[in-house]
Length: 141
Image (cartoon, helix red, strand yellow):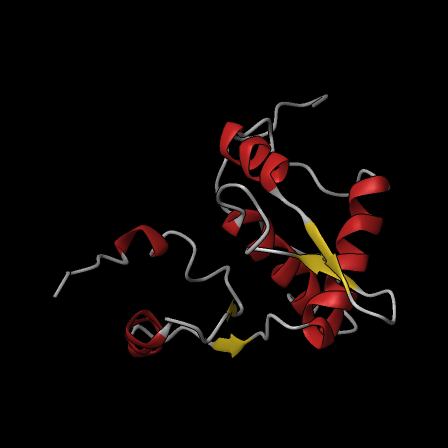
């Protein structure tokens, strides 16, 4: 059994309203985070959940509403994404066809999807998403 430390989340606990997760292989970490008092929301990986979230992610990306601060891991993961389309035209990232890891992009799409679930944004005051990771953006980035 591996011990996992969640102390790196302590800085953000007061700011995080909820964490979305994929139920596949999430058992222990979800239990541990729930024990830490985090609000957890299951987010399916099928077209029903990921289709609208992916469409909104693309809209925000094209509108330059998303920034990652030049994070090289985000660049690498974005370059690995391939997309699957269903007969209705819904699109979602395809982990099976993607060459390498795409998990941070999938997590961001899930966050965008959850932000759509609340009319005033996930903070309740219209602020939208908090993206954890990468380097801080400089003014003018």
